[in-house]
Image (cartoon, rainbow, N blue to C red; front, side, top):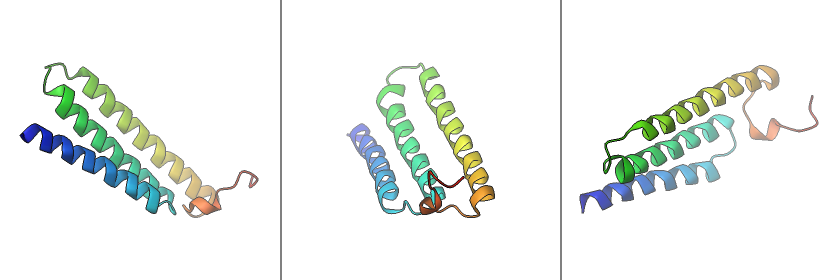
Length: 98
């Protein structure tokens, strides 16, 4: 019973991340934060569904490392974008602005 409520919590975290992604997509920082919420929901669900049943946590470390790499790459691209364009609006991105 407790396991199903914890998996329900991880699904709720994932759905909240999707809603933030759909409704707060004006700034790139909001998009990056919603990706982190999605990654937190995925890590939490993997930990509860697969990680606790087996004692092998190496796949969990790989998922966490990919999440950290995604966050650092996103922040470095955000800093580069702000230096070039001066803001982090998604509408300021254009394919023809060079």
